[in-house]
Amino acid sequence: MSLLRLAKRALSTQPWTVLAAAVRGKGHEKTGQPCQDAVAWRVVRGVLLAAVADGAGSARLSEVGSETATRAALDHLEAAPELPEFGRDEAAARARLRSAFLAARDALSAEAQKRQAGPGELATTLLVCVATAEQLWAAQVGDGAVVFAGADGAWRALTRPTAGEYLNETVFVTSDGALDRLQIESGAGVPRELALFSDGLQMLALKMPEAAPHAPFFRPLFAWFGRSGDAPDAREQLEAWLRSPRVTERTEDDLTLLLARRRD
Image (cartoon, rainbow, N blue to C red):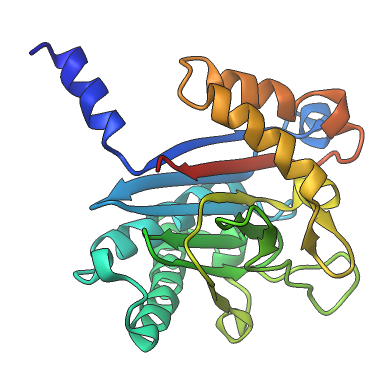
């Protein structure tokens, strides 16, 4: 059997179809700054691990911080020996998610030292998700959100944006007391569709102030994803949509979106 056919067979047996993109917002295009968001995912032993981070606009190395935080958190979760049964022991799941954020903080501190910078110069939010065949867990510090739909097709928010002390302020992983503001939530029932996004999409994806998912945003998006998620140019199509006027007329921030759907 050819390597290409083996690769296609391996893909078809994965329980999740995943598509993700992060694009620079209009504000950073005007100033020549890079995209400060990061997104990462992997499927390990049938379990989907996903992370989104939004580097602080005022932080000098925020794009480094977002990449470092997502990678460190997922590396920590992947190493969990209980991963295939994640969530069956609620206390263990909460402890593992909290320790993933501690691992991200440690990685940010180490990266800051390597660059002779302060941890605050790598300030970033962080959203992390663990999805098994039976349960969905998420943890979050900062803005953005994790939302999902179960077998009934109804969209629900698992996490919500975390506000800071002042208007339009959020909390970063590097902030003092950040882990005291850590959200850890689990979803009821089997997750069928899942989305993680940074704050650039909040005004489109959530009904505020209750931070409930805006179903007319997600339903056509996942209908398209169901048709095109495995296409070779699906990521380019998603990036083009994120850069379209429909989206950018509502925000100048960087835009990051991860879509996932169970194949069964």
